[in-house]
Length: 326
Image 1 (cartoon, rainbow, N blue to C red):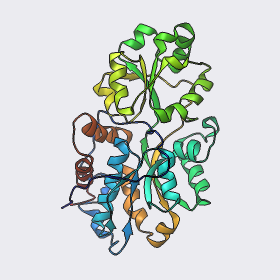
Image 2 (cartoon, rainbow, N blue to C red; image 1 turned 30 degrees about the horizontal axis):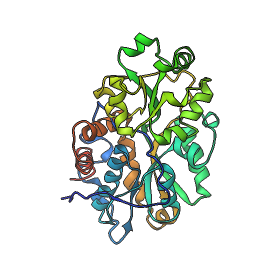
Image 3 (tube, one colour; image 1 turned 180 degrees about the horizontal axis):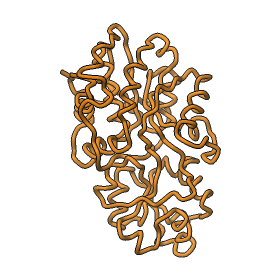
Image 4 (cartoon, one colour; image 1 turned 45 degrees about the vertical axis):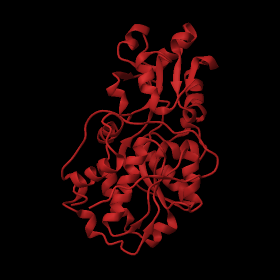
């Protein structure tokens, strides 16, 4: 029986604002799936091994981190509390410094944030981008295990009906609104999105608009869907494809008609020396990754952010329903 564990914070350098995302509504999978049968993780013996699992600080990452912690525990490994770290750069630094052994990262974040590449230069397609970041990170001593179908890509949302009222269904139409009536184009966004090249600065450049600074409301990520829905602080807001609060707040996503946002498929990133010492880690996480679709993870996120369930309980049920644990 898994004992719920509290996430503990690691102070890793300067605080960087949260990435994106929280959660969303819809499709939760269950039962059997790619888990390979009842309690399949118990067939993998990692007893005697010890691991420290990290995560970013938002809901999806904490749920995925709890899945990783509990999956490793099911193999008999010694796993400490999940270490949550604020900001993509900080959690990556903790990995490369050996303060944590592994965490779930996104291919788009690897390409743009960690490797400092332009979003427009990313290889086309999920698999091509995954292969590119995995190859690039080998020289850094970081291994990328199998990527999940889950694509946690950025998006811009507005309230259902407001898109028709303002004539804004695509990001090109949003750019036109900025030029025509910047007050109506007011945007809510979190600090990290506002500074990332694959976030707001790159979006403005790609679509050719420049929203005045007073047209941007910087908010905690978790507050953006509700504020966007009410229109009190903004008519538009930064979200992600797996955000659990999108459907709950009757938001619609603007079409990225110029395909600016790159794919953000999740994969477990592991220090190569840790993987070399424990090669069966791929057997633990590759089947789990295969089950993590955008729709399923959106449902997991919604259970936490809208339903109020604890991430460790959602993780435990996911592993049981998909046949990874008994």
